Amino acid sequence: MAQTVYHMVHYREFSHDNVSLKSNSLEELVRQQLSGTGLSGLPRWEAIEDRVLDLGSGDGMEVVLNRVADLSSAIFGEMCLVHSNGVQALLKLTAEKHQASTITLAEVYSLMEESAPRGSKYVRGLAYFLAIGNHLFFIRTQSLVQGTIEAYVDWLLRQGVSGLASGDSMELSSKFDKSALAGDIGDIRSLRVGGPTFPQMNIKPVTEVQQKERATTRKIADKFVQFGQAFDLATALLGPARAQKLAESLGPEERLVVDAVVKVQGTRTEESKRQLSALAKELDSLTEGKVTVEGKDGKITDKDAILRTNMPFNHQKDGHMLLDFYNVADQLQKVYQRFVDDKKIKS
Image (tube, rainbow, N blue to C red; front, side):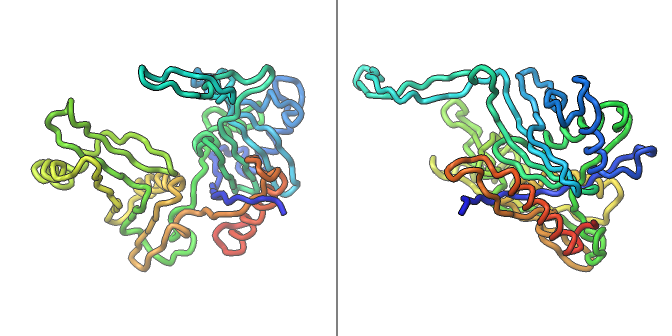
C-alpha cells in the first residue's frame, strides 16, 4: 500500500468583470489559454516555456506549470516554484579533522553549497490545483504560498488576445461568510481568532538595551518569524507601567504566551465584508488557529467559515516526498464532490 500524507485542501471561488467573457468559467478560461498559441508558436499544452512565469523578484524565482492535464470535467496541474540562480547546502560525508578552537580538534563532515546540476533547477515549492467550473482547489507543499498560486492564475488568464484584458479585474475569494450561503447566522457581529499560532512573546525590560534583548516570535505553521512590536503590543494592552513591571518580573527563560483573541464588533458594511473576505485568505493559512464567526442568530466555527479540509494523498514512491500526480487529481475531485453534496458550493 502506498505511503500517504495529509495536506490541507484550500478552496477559492473565481469571478471576473469582463463582459464579453462573462459566461466563461475559470475551467473554460484555463482550457482556452492552454489551447492557445504562445510565443513558441505551439499550443501552450505542448510548449512548457510558454507556461513559465518569472516572478520579477530579481533572484531568479519562477513558477512553472509543469504536468498539466485536461480531465474533460476539469483542468488539473502541478506548479513548481524554481530557483534558477540558487545554491543548495550539502553535507559531504567525507570525515576530516578540524581545529574548532584552540582546545578542540573535532572530526567533521564538510558543509558546502552547490548550484543545481547543469540542465536543472532547484524546486523550492510545489502545488497542485484543480479548476472545475468557477471553483479552484489546491494544496501546497514546501514554500509555494497561496499568493503566488493566485498570481500565476491571474498571469495565465491574461496571456494572448483571447484571455482577460489588462484592465479586467479578477478575484479568487475564499468562502468566509456562511450567512451568504445558508442565511442562518444573520449579520456577523464579531470575528474571533485564537489558538497556538498567535504571538508567543519574550518580553525584556526597555532599560539596558545593550545587555537585555527585547525579542519576540510568532509561530505560524511551525516557523518562527520576528515580531518586533511585541513590547509595544504589551504596552498598548496593559499600559506602560504594568508592561514594564511584567517585563521585569520574567526570568531569563520565561515567556508570555498570548492565546490571542482578535474581536471585531458592530454591524457589517459593504467595506467590512470586503475586508473580512480578504482577511479570510490570510486566516486560511493558519491551520493551527481557530476562527469563530458570531452572528445575531448563531455562531459558526472555522470549518464552516473557511472552506478547507484535510485529505490523504499518496506519495509517488514510498520514502519519497513527491505526491502521486493522478492520486492528487482523484482526491481533489472527491473534495469538490463532497462540497457540492454538502451544499457548500454549487456545481
